[in-house]
Image (cartoon, rainbow, N blue to C red; front, side, top):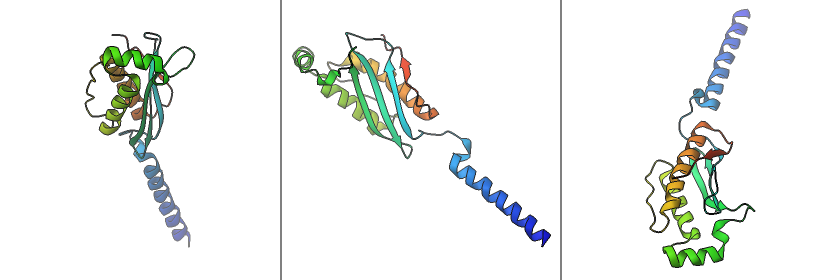
Length: 152
């Protein structure tokens, strides 16, 4: 009876170790960790501070928000006056290029190349830096907001 009890303890211990390994992935952090992650520009540029927020689920990016806000928190892609001025001057506008860049990040899952959109090259440079930072946060599983120097 004593042998059976010892054997049961041993088997329970092994089962517990395997359970912990399955739940923690053997403590290896490979790929993207589930959660929400944000990278934000350290400074305002032309009155706007850009940011990227991603949601990772099942190790995959399932949503990407790329935008900018002014000091009062107003979102750049909602500014119709700015949109009209930029469209006529640059041939694109925030609602177009933010979705374009965000879509490429989503499609490439952080590993693909992001193509620049004509008329939004300054934002392209910022996006590249913010995207790299937010992907690194997701790999580490660090949901704190990372502040990024996006100055050229």
